Image 1: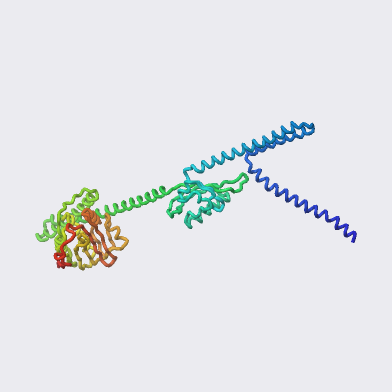
Image 2: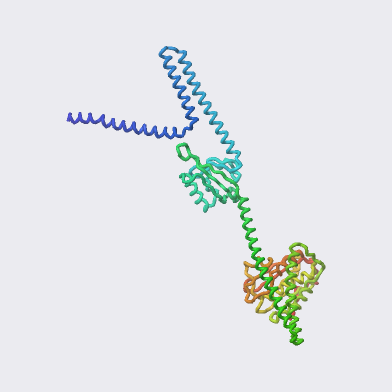
Length: 476
């Protein structure tokens, strides 16, 4: 047992020594692990200052040691004072350098014309300048702690986080993007941002630095440019279609005129046939003349060069005249009028208003290929004379109604070919607006259309005894 005890006692110090050695090794490793990164992060100016101070202190210590051996108290005191002054001086210099650096950084950060921010690895603002606060409509003091991603839409956040992840890992040196940001007041603003990672000398991450610029005007300009380009393309397409259509109309008319003129010129036709063909020639010539007149009228209207000859006029009388003339155009259509008696007069150019009403009735007939009733009505309401022309034709799709009064716009998806230039309704809109009125349409595809226009009345109120509710007149 004694031997066993001796063995145990002999072994004990050996195990303790191993533990002590391991503990000492761990302590040294921990110390080096803390010191080496610090040493690696020390800049050359800091290193020079530390070396100078350490040298001065070491020299003072050597002098003090020598003086102590010689019992020279005065030298000891002077050496100690010199060492303290050296350390104090270096400390003061270092403090002043750090202060100047901080002031310089603060001035640069605050006075930058761009939004600037420092953001941590979790994309939380550490600091932001006043320009950034202004861009995000937030108080500068409220920026720290807010997440960068809180100012962007969810569908943009995924991409932003991915980009910063690459920057944090060192896969890229800089990232930038243009994103639509949501300000604190819920207004939206385009921000062009650029970010880089700030790292310590040992390569460890410190924070992100991000610059922000308002790129809203750039995007507005680009959108306007795209819209203008689309409009130019549309106008170019319409010009091409119009040129093709006008060429076709001219060619058709001239071909008919030429052919019938050659037949008449042959001299083998009976007088009745000559009379009939002469009528065809006149109609074709009228069509060409109408086409040219429409183009010139629209140009003068849009340029403001057309002057109206304004005078008091009765729209009921105009409607009756147009109804009589239109009733002989097609045997398949019945033109009916429903005119309010004692209708107030309007100030207007009779020739131009007849032109508008004739065009609307002509369209009602053209776009009702199966025939049917065309109803022309007038009534007084809200200080204006409201007129309408109703047909039971093919109707107009909702997505085309907004385009209907534009230049060269024609709804052509009809069972039969409709002849026209696409200028009539554009001219009608210009004429009605020059009279201080408005024109519009109510329509549904397959259910016919009702075209309205309203013009201010000369007398807004008539005595009740002189204003019957309605009076029907029909033209067979």
